[in-house]
Every structure is written in structure tokens, then in C-alpha cells.
Image (cartoon, rainbow, N blue to C red; front, side, top):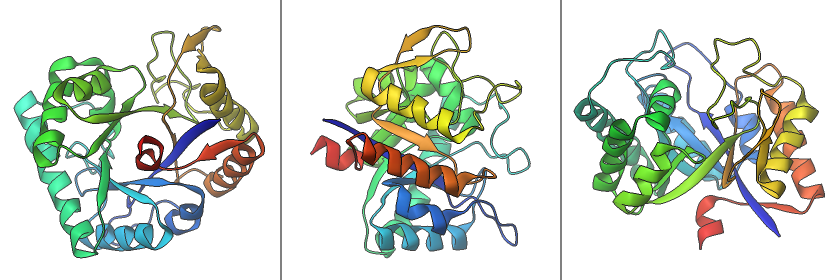
Length: 256
């Protein structure tokens, strides 16, 4: 029997700006990654998102990013490992406060955007992030791109890790995600994205844009809540995974 976690980035609204269909998508995910105020989100949004996640029984994770609201944390910044460590501790600690105040527990940490992609390839940076998570709470699970430097760093520091795959992104031959600057970075066809997820979970492979299969481990699959058809996709993925007898449950439940 195959099992997989479905995670979604949430809490990315800010002030009067609203982004994502968080409440609508919550019934179709098992874990959420909540923005911590650097790339998106603010204290009130963090509080509301934590409360909504707890009400739906979704496992909660911190989603620390680069301090770049204007670029939504998707632009590379030339940060030092020490700065990365400080940013992650600061943001994880902020969300932890809201989770604790609401009577919940934090399950995981998943870096956001450019910080995530930089850490996937840069071992020095990934070591700093892994140590930051471990020092805040060694029981936290570190989410990272499947097979990346980030998951290897997490394992070596002593964290539980989850290899993450993406439903609506295309892959390069080296296992990296296609840059969002490229026209073929996103998969917009719902059925194509669902079938990519099923194949990654069941067969452990994904077809690269170069046209051949690469090995991949799918502990958790990321969907996005801010696309034009985000809710329809979330519903379709949830339904079709059930129809193929793939059990959807949080990483904590899977690793219990």
C-alpha cells in the first residue's frame, strides 16, 4: 500500500492583500506550510491560518523565506550561512509561538521559494538551515526537495526528513525544478499533474523535460493554493489518489 502526505503553502496574504484559497483547500490536504512574515504573511494572517489548520486537523509547518515581500521570496539573495540560520530560527520561532498559543503542535519546517531552491543545491546553506531547525526543536521534520542537499543535511544533523515532490512543476534531468522563468515550468493541465503525482508515488520516477525518467522519492507532495484552478486540482488529486488506493496522511502519521 502506498502512502503520501499532501502539503500546501498557506497564510500568504498580507495586510489588505489576499492570496490563495486557504480555507477552501484545507479539507484536501494533510499538512500546511504557513508563511512567517518574510516573503508573505503577517502576524494576524499567521494566527488565523494556524487556527484554521487546527480546526481541519492538518499538520502545521513553518514556511520560512527570504526577506523579500516585493519578490515573494522567489528572487535569489546573496546571504551567508549565518544569515540563513538566523532567518530560519526567527521565523520558525514566530510561528511556533502562534501554534503553542492555539494549543497545537508544530510538525515540520519547509523553506520557501528561492531559499528552498538555493538550499537544494548548496550544501553549506542547507547545513545552516538544518542546524537552525534542529536547534529550535530536534523533533521537527525537515521538508526538502527529493534527493537534494537539504534532505541530506537534515539527515546528517539528526532530523527526520521528508522528500518532497511537486504536483504542478516540471523537472530537469538532475532532479531540480524547472525555473519559473521558463515557459514550461508549470503544469496547468489538471489530469497531467494528477498522473505525475500518481506515477511519482507508485513508480518512484518522474519524466524530465528532457524526455526520460529520473528516480524520485515522494514522501510528501506539494500543491499550490494560489493558482487559477487550485481548488479544482486539490479536489481532483484527493479523489483520484483515493481511487488508486494511495493513502493520504501526514508525514507524522506515516512515520509513526
